[in-house]
Figure 1: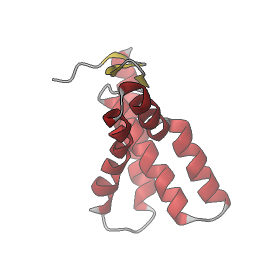
Figure 2: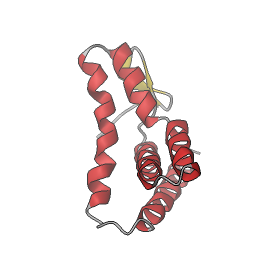
Figure 3: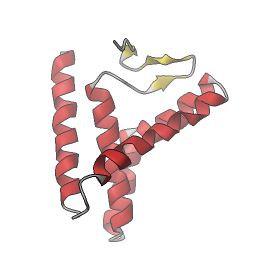
Figure 4: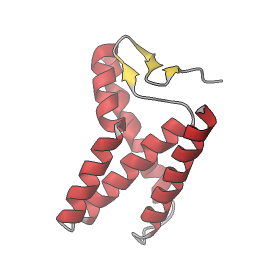
Length: 117
């Protein structure tokens, strides 16, 4: 089942790449913007509880969808782009097994305990 979820996340990530392509921006912007949501980890400099909140707000797909829909409703391309980038980043993270964080530890996520490399 885990691989099926990762494939689903990868497909959503590819959909975000397609949506990004509709903005007619230079392609190098995509990887640059894709890394910005990781600034949500700054809260971990205070403690894991604060870090989990700041991280989860930025990595919660609902945040991305709400921002994107507000942008769509207001015809604001910047908000639409922010929503797409946030969603792409969250899908990318989930595809590699990184989930939303619990307040006790950076490595304790809704997907279990992260085991990178």
